[in-house]
Amino acid sequence: MPIYLISKVADPIFAFTIGISAAFLRIRRDQRDKFPDRAQEIGYGEVLQVGGRRLRRWWMGDFQGL
Image 1 (cartoon, rainbow, N blue to C red):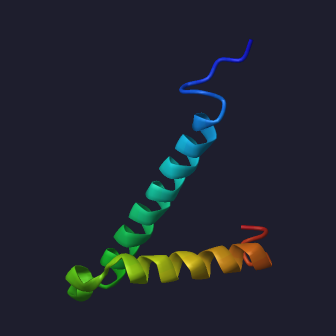
Image 2: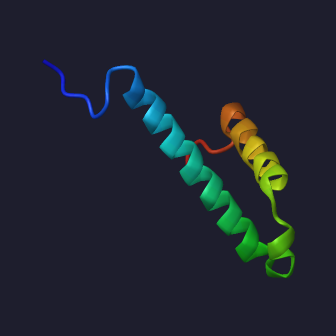
């Protein structure tokens, strides 16, 4: 009998949510470190754009062999 944290359906949703939030926080922190003078201006839109660009690059295979 498999053991689930919440349930068979909720565990993948929970993992996806945790992963997305971790990626969001990492991108936001990276952007704040890269542009400290604009730290207050970095919002959800910019983080989503950077995340989208990274996802597209990953999908196209730019990160293979790293």
